Image: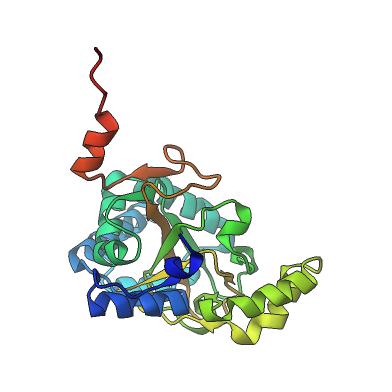
Length: 275
């Protein structure tokens, strides 16, 4: 099959709405949408609140979660942050029910952009970035540079409103050829130098609580020092088509099947009759 046909987005098998959605994603490299299941989002927030109530031995119930999360830097020291983050991952985020509710936040968009037979990252990532905390920086990178498959996408979900330096940046897909020229010319000068050359082309993403960001993780992206007055708390998780090629992060250790259709189950279990 020619590459030209692979890049075509028009198909009589797809609705016009789906074609436009795919065209926008391929052009931008990302989409922002409202979470698809508010009950699942509430379930996730409640798990965070229970954790903080218990871990910090709070006597009063947290009435405004977003305000509490925004001001977490006033409650927890930078020195204690990583230990708390790892505890939160191990005690709450790594659980099966948490992963299920995370998937429900974006079930429909995953079927549109990725497919209907899916593998999901086994551990959801958590990022907590305090104002002016340089220990949480993630410099410009693409996940494929460290062995991730280009068939993966990332679902990024904030628990606060994210904007300006409190958010993340990504290079739009339609600017990738420009990036390639800069990269080939300066690849021995480091990512910081290359970032300085393409910084003006980066798109700073505004994502509010109650929204998700789905993006192409093979595009350069990252964050900078949080110069806003609020803490950023965000989660991210990779999804991919179950039967698409894997990079260095394999099915079974990094990814786990979450949607397998009956025809695939029949095919995988089929054995030709022996004579």
